[in-house]
Length: 605
Ligand code: M6R
Image (tube, rainbow, N blue to C red):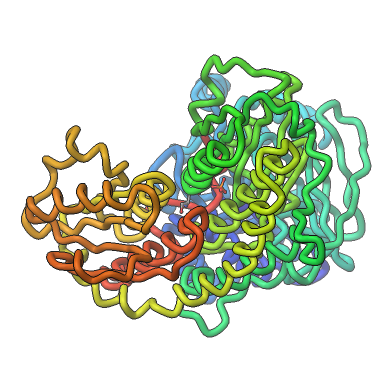
């Protein structure tokens, strides 16, 4: 979390830093700050709250200077106030940081004993102090190198020095950092998206690297202070389509895009002339896969749970889905015949990345399913399958979730076919059904208004439940997560069959309960569970492809999804749940794209 940016230029940089910070706000938005160098001094300006607040401050009191750094914060150490906001500066150096310095308490004590004092409660300020101290005795490269060596934990850093008026320093360990190249100016940023209005030429630092950015050149060093070269990538225009347009917020745009992004992803992977899925060269022969382990966090984890059902349905492969923050520390037995799949929209989630690193260290076969193809996970995994969803800016994941499920589904069908566990005819039929999916998604999207009406029931609700069986269970969990993060209403997703084992006690008269009941092999059983909820006063919102009206009595509302083959229901069921979370949040006046306490890219564990 946290976003950092740095620019060295031949013109004033503060407006460009503010522009880049606005793009990085998805990473953190509790405070913001900027440092530039002018008149032979460091000008640090910072505030609590959004970049807009910082912009107003700069309007009153402009920050001149042709080099500078900026930061948006997601607090880890110390409350989000002005003092704890970054940059953290001394007389001679100013620092912005994304990550956590795990030995900051120890370092603080060490430097207090040396006579230094600290202004903030942050872990970051130790970096400022250490750099300040080393500057007294070391040359620049040694000062940076020795400082980095003292730090434990994760970081991406941007640093400027009062006495180096043509220099911004970047460093990376565990948190991402991109370098952008311009004409007589160069940039660092937490991601390429932040730099996109300034350049489309990008390099990425690897763990342990640091870089010296001058106006006319960039020098890279590895953790042993050796000069290294970096590949320069050219971003395509497609990477640059992250604008809100006429939409009120990114989330509504991203929900609406799902028919298009699904079609695009299908086109990327399907050879329609042969009805074949173009996924080849997996790091392990599909016929020899002993087990598949799916690892991710949050919404991405729900896509893994979904995949578990599809794998069991379509192959004989043993499968497990794991939460990355658990997997990375568990004594998991890693096996060379297993395939380890890591799912992440950002490709930067710290826990998912650490779980992947653990697998890489043990030489097992890994596959990354990501949206951001230049991300750390994409670069580390043996094999990468992009979801082609385009930039997702809203903190609540929507189109990326659909994309993750879609790529997992395609991969599973392909593995099943390679293992001859699905017959050719069925394979072809499933592919033909899949081709129709974008249209079904479109139809479902067109019914947004239906959900708007029912959203009112939730505004004053104490809590709610999402129930489903089989394929609908992971979607129930995802629906509950969406409502929680957007509207701050307590919601849980349950396997409908679990209700009697405890959760039924929570049902009160008038409590809204969402029941996912597509007409699949679980339908009758789900309906029985639904009746048990109704009998106890629950107000049911039923989401189904069933068109019979006989069982609609006592149902507060029924949302109809189009009829398709039941394996594809999850793609449709999740859409009304996205709408529901969105409209409840709107009614409650919540910040749709930036829910409280959260950030889009979780780069700390
Ligand atoms: O970038 P990732 O897919 O790795 O992110 C994982 C989770 O942090 C993310 O899905 C989170 O749960 C979403 N905000 C939920 O909408």
